[in-house]
Amino acid sequence: MFARWWQPLFWLIVAIAAAGALVLERRHPPRLPAPAVAPAPDAVVIPPLQPFEPQPLPRYAEIVERPVFIEARRPEKDELVAPPAPVPNPDRTLDLIGIVLVPNAAAALLRPEEPNAKVLRVPQGGTVDGWQLETVQAGKVVLRKGDEVRELTLIRPSSPPRPVPPATAVSRRAGAAPPSARPAPRP
Image 1: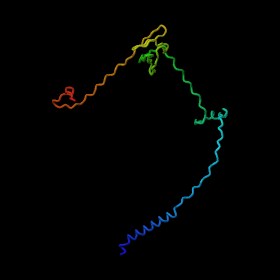
Image 2 (image 1 turned 45 degrees about the vertical axis):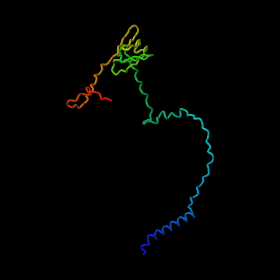
Image 3 (image 1 turned 180 degrees about the horizontal axis):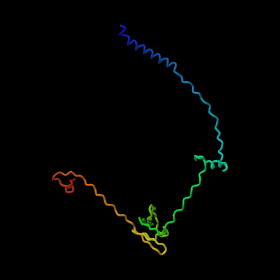
């Protein structure tokens, strides 16, 4: 007989214990400790800013004598001055490789024939090696130096061969007309 009543009896004891815990919780709720209130600090007084005055230069003499970021801590020697740029050859030949024509200005792109020479952009009226760019036209420019006149024509590089379009692989059945011979489909 006890085997039949032991499960309901167990759950009845659990329910009574839970009800008792709820009653105790309701009568005596847990209380959190009171937070400690810290007193507010006194007003912070910020002193007025003082103007910055750098130290006298003799104070920094040691830094010049023993630089901070150089491993040897010795002053660097002055770098050698690069030799002046070579004086351009007055009779060097120039190639006209481009012309700029816009409504209010014109310029010529000239390249000396020297190896690794930089392209010079000379506006109309400007000078290069003593030569003044007098006239700029669509295919040529005129340079003048005193009584001497030099006319340069635009160098046009030979055009590279045009690439051949790749042939499209079209599977053709025996007796089928090529695509160009077929009539267009009607809408």
